Image (cartoon, rainbow, N blue to C red):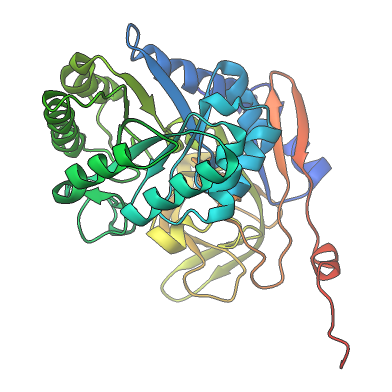
Length: 418
């Protein structure tokens, strides 16, 4: 499906022209399609028909309450990495028994909040963390359901900053130390060992690394069972990519086939933690052109969105699709470099976008902005946090207002000596 498409030469989110939203909210703003979110969740779930699965949306991808509630209403659980995300998930209506807590640096207070909330599972990433979860559970008179996150030492073949499954990263227990950890878990009080978790990277478009990681995970399960250890759950994490500008990606059905081939025969509950896969193509960032600058070597199109609003191009070298909001005659397209106004050379959305002539005041839409856009935004260069809007059919609502610089200043205070 195409949630964002031209209708009568005007780019629309479902049935709502983006120009109409821009007139109300100003630019830049994020816009999300509820229809696309629901479609993505159902498509993901359908790929595993017949299996006992729990789809836990990775809230770090986009933590807006309206986005989370839309997915929760579809039946999704939530994957969290902090107490703040736990609070957001619960506030959006997520059921505690469908929440999984991942992350390598959980604090005592965060573990306490998770235990008291009665979440589905805490993914343990180290032996010291195992001891801490046991201590906290004993203090509260609760039992904590746990799974061990393994580090299978697999190269995810993705961006080096997105790879999490090899020994040089901070994540998970190495397989050599796993047997000792499982035995320790059996001896510690207030712990309920459920199984294993694995997550080897993000935005993966080659699925063979999943095959290697899942095979090592399956072998671990078989060894445990041979030793009389019950394994109920397998958490496969997330990481499946989406196509960005010009990228090719293997069909999702190939990933599902790997899961069915390697994991399904184990007979476990299978947990998934998709983030980008559910929300990435469900959002766009709409921006206005504030200047066109022709240099000797390049033509620059300067827009009012910047790297503080969408950091992925600057941080990961990511390239998002970008088109005019008002459809134009493309007989005279030319290469342009699209940049923001932040005082950094890295504030660059992309070079050689082949676009029709654009003028000051025109709007452009940056696609694949539903994941790791607003959730990673900052106020760098004294900039406002931009609004977020959700569309459903011919209706739309501002689901986060613009947070002005004046409001940000009001959060601060001068010390008495000043």
